[in-house]
Amino acid sequence: MNQAQVRTVLEENYIRYNQPAFILNDPIQIPHRFTLRQDVEISGLFAALLAWGRRPTIISKCHELMRRMDDAPYQFITQHQDEDLKRLLGFCHRTFCDTDLLYFVHWLRWFYSGHDTLEDGFLLGSTQKERLENFHNLFFSLEDAPQRTRKHVATPARGSACKRVNMYLRWMVRKDDQGVDFGLWNRLPMSELICPCDVHVERVARRLGLLDRKQVDWLAAEDLTAHLRTFDPQDPVKYDFALFGLGVEGEM
Image (tube, rainbow, N blue to C red; front, side, top):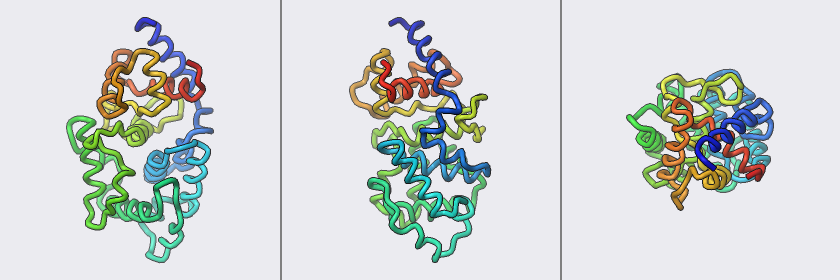
């Protein structure tokens, strides 16, 4: 398959999957429940970072978490009393448990006390790699940050492809007229986003000749994105819809 054919496959399936119907079976439905920007940011962060395993289970656990926050995450984060934190005890999704959740809540409260938007936390650095590394460092800069919680916020400094963080940034930054991604943030350019790289994306990308690196790590995510930029320099991660959709349905 030549490059023109690859681009045709990507464009056709980007259009096919980047539709409102995509929301119904994807964790992105969680932030779509909200209209307040901070609610979208917070619920989206949890939905993206908990996106590990079967999608129905992820979605169910995220709905549970939002209920524990009275379906008003920003208000809960910024106004909770110590007594309110008891309702978070017992929450667990795979290895993310209440110890991790309580630190997330603690950090978000600290951050929003000095910032109006979570976007501010992702602006430290001149490259996307630096921004993600600096966000990780900022997130775990508080004295009581549990060591065990660090694995739940990936960083390129450890070689991770940072699939879930990159997916979150796609949700918050990408702008189009289809209504799936939010495009809430304006200071991070779409052109610099890195494609989320999971097993579905990896499998299809390799078959299309877009990924050669054996390891699925940060360098692989950068390599894949560089290939995608040759098809759309301004919005390379839009093809995540095509790669993920084809991978999930096994249509390749």
